[in-house]
Every structure is written in structure tokens, then in C-alpha cells.
Image 1 (cartoon, rainbow, N blue to C red):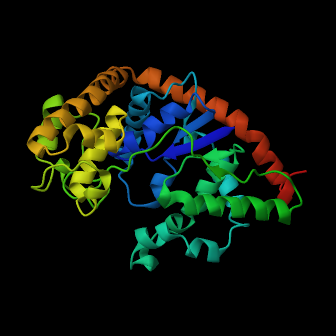
Image 2 (cartoon, rainbow, N blue to C red; image 1 turned 60 degrees about the horizontal axis):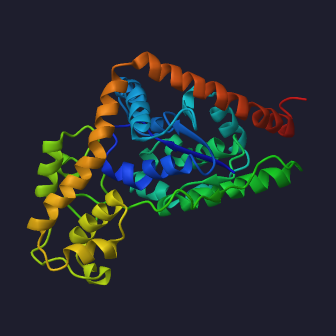
Length: 331
């Protein structure tokens, strides 16, 4: 089993990233061979500050390692350090079909009404994503609900390429359900919207770099409702902010939602929020400390990424060579 996944190095990691993906990646390291990359090529599909992108590479690498990604267990690298990603993307764009890409809901969502003004890269983004996966013959990809369609597209591209060129080269990947459950963390200001680094309000999210005091303040001021906590999860329906805070507590502590409610049923948020803050601080404080240590050693971060890129390049080279041969670009 080989797992591949990436994350864009844009902005700081927040609690939603940590509980929704990164800690799941950490657990995957003990279940499969893992390759994790900083998706800086993907970051180019929208307007971005070049200086910000450059500084975010090391920052994201440090955050992942601080959160538990172990370079001794996993291959951690920068996407653009492997030219094969871009080369294979171009080859696969001859296999992918406009109709397939037109149906991508994320394209529709991100382009909005201004499709004519969106970049070509934003439209073909899923083909680069397919190349990221197929280059390493990944068997499984950890994805959320919003990314399942892209895995289906990757499978379609793999199967069509293999059929068109009569080869058994690309492995149609499966969604990975290992690594335990991933929490869907919502904004602290709006329980119906995902926690996001693009939200203009700093109070909507908890950053991995936030101080203990800042974490406590953000949770204290998180939006709630006046009702006490119920004794069952069903009763949280129609209470998005309450459901979000209970879900965060459960994800941070490893308890189930029912266990959390069993402990705090009948209590108001005045009693619940301090306990939630303590739990979040206990999770983030050691990560923040390790992150600060890694920031002070950029040479070590560069060494880790270079070693990861060397390993990834070795894994991907045979696949790219066979793809070139299949389409007639080399003997």
C-alpha cells in the first residue's frame, strides 16, 4: 500500500487542517508507505505573492514536522523539486477530456461566475492532481468529501491511458479510509462554514502559532447559542455552533461526541468552553514549541526536503519513462 497526499503551502496551518487532515496523516505513517508533498505548483493556479510562496514552503514543512510527520517514516518533499510532476501532467492532458474537467464541482465553485477570467491552471488543476498520484503508482489517497470527484477523475485518466496505449502502467487509486477519523472543523464565528485561512476574521480560526492566551480568548468568544448542551448527538441538529465546539472537543481528546455530551449534558457553554480551551492548548502547545525550534534551523528543513525530493524522484522516474515510451516520446 502506497499513500500520496499534498497540501498547498499558502498561509499558516490552523486547527481545522490539523484535525481534518494532518493528524490523520500522522497516523497513516504506521499503516502504509506515505509520500506527502508541499503542493507549490498547485498554488500557482490563483493569484499569489511570490515572496509569500517562497517563505511559506519552509513554514509549511516545519508545521508538518512539528505536528508529527516523521521524515524517517514518510517521504516529505516540495512538489516543484520534481519536474516529473509537470511533465506527466502535460502527457495526461492528452488523455483527460474537456467534458470530464467541466464537470468538476470545485472548478465551478472556485471560478464562480467569472470562468472566462479564471486561469487555465485552475481548470486543469485536477490533471496535475492526477499526475501527483499516478507518478508514484499510489494505491490509496486520503481525501475528504470535496475531493472524491478528483479521485474518480484520476481513475478515469489512469484507465483510459492504460487502454489507449495498451499498457499496464498506471494504478487506479482508491480513497484511503485508514488513519482514523478526520474531524470537519468549522469556523468559530459561523458553524456552517469550514474553518479557513482565507477568512478575514482571525477570530474564526485557531492557528498552530497562537499563544495559549490567544487560543483561550478565541474559544471564549466563539459563537454559541443560549441553550445548554444536550445528552445526545441528535439534539445538536440545528445547532451548528454547538455541534462544532463539541466535535472539536471530541477530536482533540479522542472521545466520541456521545461521551463528551455524557460528561457535559445540561451544562452551558460557560462551563464547557474553559474545558475545551484547556484541551486545545494541551494539543497545540507542544506543536507550537517544536515549530519554533524548526523555524530556527532552516538548513535542517532544506536538508529534509532535499532528501525527500531525492527519494520521490527515484520513485517517480520509472513511471515517467514508461509513460513517455507509451506515447512515443522515447524508445
